[in-house]
Length: 80
Image (cartoon, rainbow, N blue to C red; front, side):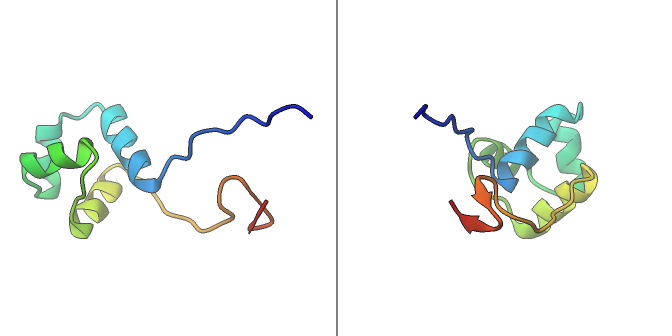
């Protein structure tokens, strides 16, 4: 039996970080638009946490939406 390739799991926060990088906006501009300190954004982009209110504002700015559904790598919503 061949080994099954697995993709690295990308969390929602990782997707937000990737969207920030892909947005074409400077981090300075994003911080001004969402009311976040640049130091906080820098820590977040390096893997740290960001306040929920800033995450919500960032997701709205970048037009990101959360939806519920089966997790990646599961079958019918149950672990394989």
